[in-house]
Length: 401
Image (cartoon, rainbow, N blue to C red):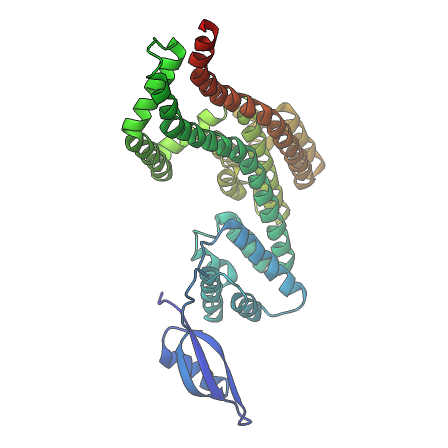
């Protein structure tokens, strides 16, 4: 499909009034043709200049969630679908998001369904969103489904934010601690080393050990920092490109004390929330399971959900398939069993999601409270150890005198 370009134009309308605005088209000729079709005589048409400073930002899941909420709000207000795209797209500060919305608008104007237009951008719209939009279009309840999708996306992003909050703080403190320790070893310890050379006596073992580390840092600091940066870059690239490595990493993450339990509960919350949303929208259970698997965010639950899909397709009840998987707590299986027997599976799954989202919230707060004194203690031992190592010869010299 040809790339859409935004054009700035000036023209005269049917009443002879000079007006100006913006429009999207493949090229300048088509932009002028579209203006004439609207009854505007174009006088000047040119490409919209790009801003000097980065208004083009990466499109984030939060941007997509806000877009879906805005679409739901527009449709609730009775604004036609195409006009909603125009209003939201033109008003977006992120140029990348603006272009994405206007491309979707152009597809829909060309006769493509909303779901199919979204499907042309799989990087930003997953199967879950596409399936729910398709269900809304087919049932005539697109407005309701958009509200449901937007709510789902907001809840999932909130959950991801809590997980990132729990993991970011200790990682940030460790990085800062490493930088501070490196500065001490490279710039501060050598000053003490020059002082100790005038003592004319053997240094304590601990002090000599720290000085040896300092000398290694002074000599190889470029290699050390370069190696760390290279290792981090290689880790990110391998994780992004290697599915087997990513799977292994996700499985290992569940074995980390405290953090593993947090990730497990988050996966159960995402599984329950996603399946509840799709089931309540009328998407068949078996068709829902593949989208649900991708939403769990962990290889163990992805594989378990896909096995459950195969079992339910063969006629096994969802509760039994969940029990066979061995990854869901008994409480979750029992809630699903009650939902299946009462015909309120979506409500029960929603309650399970609410419960585990609250559990994740509480664990994040508890983890932050637990990690803060622990990290401070570790940093205190490291930095304090360096200080003691440097003052130990001075204390020994004072006791001899």
